[in-house]
Length: 111
Image (tube, rainbow, N blue to C red; front, top):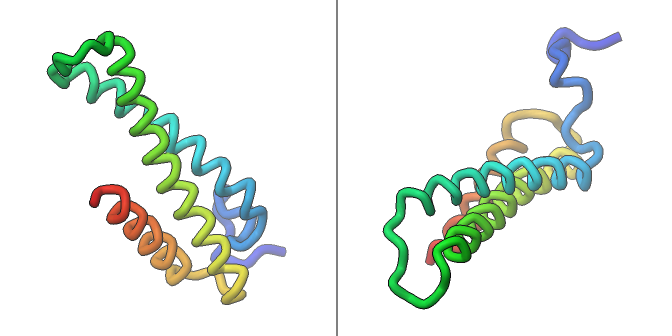
């Protein structure tokens, strides 16, 4: 019997379970979104005048954005799941910790 709080189909399991699977899934989804963002960004950016071919410049930009967003998403999922396991609670504080860890990663990469 499920409680009224977890009666939604996307809440079929609590945070704190399947951490590696959840981090990999979030990371792959983040990488796909980052690749699409990188493709759009490279289409709108004026190419560099260096001898690197234009298509290679686009692929490099797609790769960088995919790794960046995939890493952020994986960090968020892994921190959220680990916090739920350690605290033995499934509440908003886990998500806040995941967001803080992702924000720290963004700060490290952007500096």
